[in-house]
Every structure is written in structure tokens, then in C-alpha cells.
Image (cartoon, rainbow, N blue to C red; front, side, top):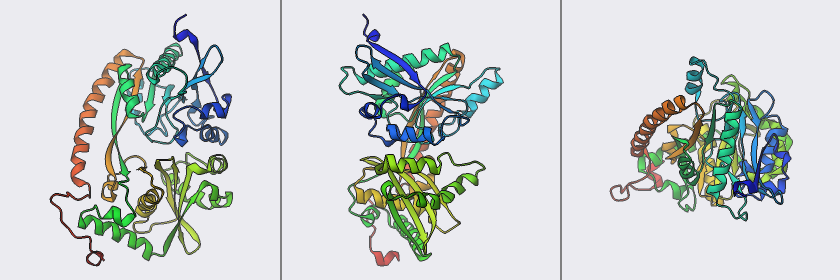
Length: 400
């Protein structure tokens, strides 16, 4: 019997096909986005499935002898590229112009959530290496794609370890850039600001002061503290951000309410109040080590409100909670001036058609060189002091 024949691979159309305890016992579920509760809330609320373009097609690997769950690749069959944050619209257009179908495609990702986390979940006590399990899951997924005339497989925001493994398996790697904040064991926000150059420090304090002088104060609530009534109060705020772009929000109040009950420790909600009225919110998720900023919205235009709600309140929270990392979402060079550093992210791609695979490979190599150059150019704009050359003062009175 070959090693591979000791395992059975199957696709499931709902995370409910696997017991929550078995799923959550896998390594990789330390990220809240891969927890059984999170994925169940997406399905139950209708955020995925139906006409959303996201059809669950999770790939599970089980030991044949006792049906023990060995590994999972959370996977979706997609009929569009919405909610992925790795933009392949030009690839789809090229397929169309060539008279070929780009959709459906397979995507291993967290729906609507561009965070770096494991694309594979696996049992630590199964006696197999993560590299072997990933190779088996990739083999099954690509064979299924070939048999079903599916154009491609895309793994979005894999970890650094996974990236190395996926490259060795022949997938094409694509570089991108986000802006992340790292906690250097700061004691408080002023300690963090003390690492800034004087001019940049003054700008941040000025922005925070504008929000305070507008009479806006903040509450930071966990999922346990978020009642259905509170969700109904802030839903119009984050919905407004999407509506201004001509589309409904990806995640609904029903999703958040269910997750508040099922996984409350993973939700962090920042709410800005003017008097007793909620005028701004940022809905975040957290793990034991990181805060992930996601959905923001406001009731109107207030000077610096976005920066305070989405960035400074989150940094304050990370310092208080001793979280090492804050990922506030994609794009946004304006984050650099607020202390977020350019950080390389990646995605991995398997393209069935060899001609398109070669063309996309060439494109990704050229694009990657541009990303490297872009990130290098951004380094000169970070607000942090050069400790050998910058001897500016941190005198509060000089910065009022």
C-alpha cells in the first residue's frame, strides 16, 4: 500500500459536515478566521453561498483506517473575484478575449478578509509533515480542477513557511504590499510616539486632538459586550462605507450577531460617540497575538476621524492587550505616517492552461520587481527616528 492510499480526500459543501471539535483541534485554527464558528457564521448568515460567488468546497483529508481528520484546505469555488483583495480581473479579461472561461476558479482564502494566515490546517499528531500534507491537498485540488474544467487555483495570503512550500510545488508566487504595525513592548501610546521624528509626532497628536475637541469619545467592546441592539446601532455606519461605493456590505449584522455568541473573544468593536450617539465604528478581529482591522464606517465627515477610529484606537488597544501585531487591512500609503510599516504579502497560483501559466509567470516576475522597488522607496517615508542621527526632543509643550 502506498503512503497516499492510507488517506481519503473529499470535498465538503459546508463546514457543518465536520464536527466543530475535530475541526478546531487542527493547527491553524489559532487564527479566528479558520475557526469552525467563524466559517459557520459565514454560511448561516448567507454571507457566502447562494448568489454571492463564494461556494464552500472545503477539501478534507482523513485517515482511511479510523476516519481521523488529518488536514483541511478551506476552499471555495468562485464565480467572480469579489472580496478577495488579490486582483486578477485582468487575467479574467485575458481569458475572455481568448475565448476561454476563467470562472469558475478555486480559491483558498478567508472570504472578505485579506490577512496573512495559514491556508492549510492539519493535525499535529498525525505523523506526517506539514509539507507532505500540503502536497497531497494541492495534488487533489488541482486534479479536481482539471477534471472539472476549472481554470485555476489561488491561495491568498499564505504564511511565509507555506510560501516556500508552495513554490517548491510549482505554484506561481505573487508579491504584494500591506502596512502593518508592530509592538515593540510599548508601555503606552506616548511611549510609541516617542520613537517618531518630532514633526511626525506633532502631526499625530494634532490629529488625535482634533477628534477629541470635536467632542468624540470612544468605547472598545468585546464580542461579549456587543448586544444585538448595539449591532443594530452600528450596522448603518459600516454599511454606509459600502453603500457609498455602490454595493451592500460583505458581512451582515446577522453574521456579527451569531459570531458574538459563538466566538465573542475574537471580536473587538471600536465605537466613537458624539454625546450618546454612535458616529463611527471599526469592527476588528483578534487572536492571542494580533489585531485585524476590518470594517469601518461613520455618520459623517469629521476631521481625522478615520485615523483615530481605525488606527490610533487600535494601536492603543494592542499596547494595552500586549498584542504583537496590528494588520489594519489592505492598501493605504497614508498608514505609513501613522506608524505602519510596509510589509510584503503574497499569494500562490496554479493555472491549468500552460500558455496562460507561462504568460502570467512572466507578468508576476515583472510585477514582483516593481513591488520590491515600491517597498524600498516607501522606507524613506516611515516616521520613526534614525537613532544615530535624529536627536529631536519629545517635549510635549513644544508640540502643543
